[in-house]
Length: 440
Image (tube, rainbow, N blue to C red; front, side, top):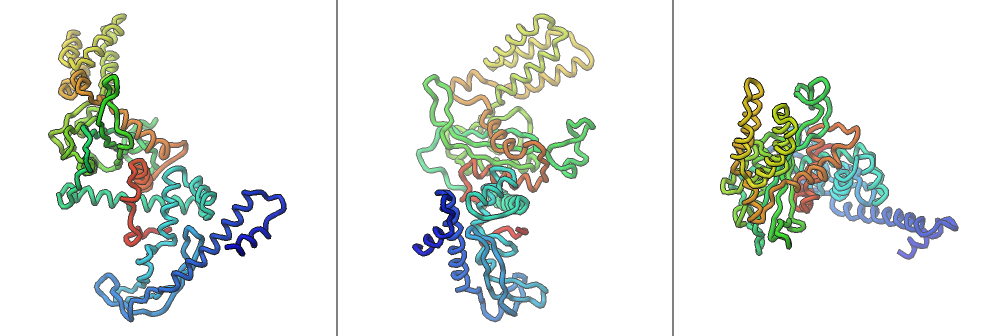
């Protein structure tokens, strides 16, 4: 190490300063580390005998030793390993690649994780610059993004498989360690992600031509509440939020929600609460009938504003007073009074049909709008946690100016961001021995 430092010092310009010294020494250490890694890998070429199972039920024969270049956190290294060929299948493979988690890939697991971390945080070109600046490894933005998307998709496949196993009861999550929180919430919302024209083709939307420009990603955030604050307002437990997100239909999303709920202890915590905007699919696909269902108060208030707008031609100058009275009734959970006040107006035709549709939202969700009662119990009545999640997890990465995603690519990156926001990166990261075999 002393010789390395001395050699580095000899290459420094006279007034280079500390940063230049650091960079030169780091570059030297990386070169030294890459050489040590190459020597370590050369000690085991992965020879598995004269014949090895090809994975398809045949026996492949060793035919040679071949070199493979792999980018690692120390730089590019060359690995020489035994190469087997199966005459029945017509393909070759190196058992050592599987052991090292580099089968079909040109990146080590460590460098893949760096790329995933960076690309989940910032756009791909910026992610490549981060890896270069912080780790001294030069990659293109395209390669960084492609690798991160593929590993995010692999992580999503692990999560989906676990959720399916939980749903079939072949996997039963362990209960949380005591002491258990008092309440577990699952809040649900959705937001649009801008996608490529191919992903939006044939889908109606809000574009000028009536077509879609986005695809909806559904998100759920689970969090716990142990206490209320000094004023009796609910307080979310610190570091208790976990996130799941998917572009899949409601039924598949319900499976993910259910698995996350069970993982977080839904069967063991005293009170389970589900918060949503009132859409029927939310309640229909959440398989915990014992849960207290709450329509987000702020969505309900927006519906009241829409109702006042619908009746504006009848209310005239009394609109604001009428709306204020209805909002007060909503805060009290008096849905019957809201509907009775709206039905005093003699509407016919389309106006009457529109009014019935608007009031149907309140009547169908009346038991989910007992806000005064919920507040007395010290419960949350708003879904701000998931709305904040939609902004922090989705919008800040996937809805920047000019972005257009494929669904698999966006799903991969959003999965990585959910893992990071949930503090579950290591638990769900695909083990190297079962690494995704997409191109790097």
